[in-house]
Image (cartoon, rainbow, N blue to C red):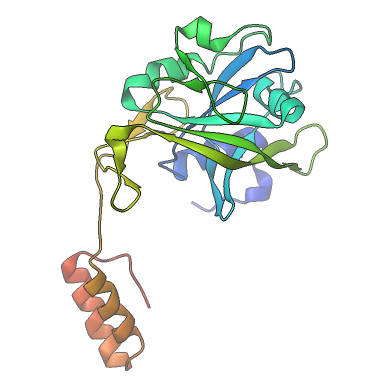
Length: 238
């Protein structure tokens, strides 16, 4: 099947994208309103933008009425701060419950029984049970979309503090343990999540061999690709 992207409406496009661009880590975003009311909501249009400075991206649609801006966006716009908390298997149910649209004056932490933890640089609280949280300040807010009033809002946040639970941190190389499995978004209309349960690694020697073979003759490249297929590195190509 071939689909004309311009012929799809926003809902069809959304469902297609979230069904195919998987897995994606969920950004569980905590904010404070200008009146000091905490808010917590999950976003699956969430990813990394840059490393120096470290930037995260969140894309937000409007509320279910198609008109009202989400409380998270309003709070970030008004205060310039937020915290990104990562979701684990143990917090999936609580995460889904924070996706329910509550009035702006309601605190999702209290509504779901989640414990708050203080941040260091920014004012919004962290999710205490989250293994990793990132305090962020606004780097940029912009809109994408061709129809006025139906734009998506994109927030780029600069990470100013990382909170990493001790048991998921490897001091030697600054990476997280593979035993920590973040929740990731799943296909549409399921109200469920999936986990990243398999980790794949490619030996450096195989990468060096591939690079060497890719610069050789046509016969060398053919032999290299046959070898790659035999060893399971079937996604690499010259």
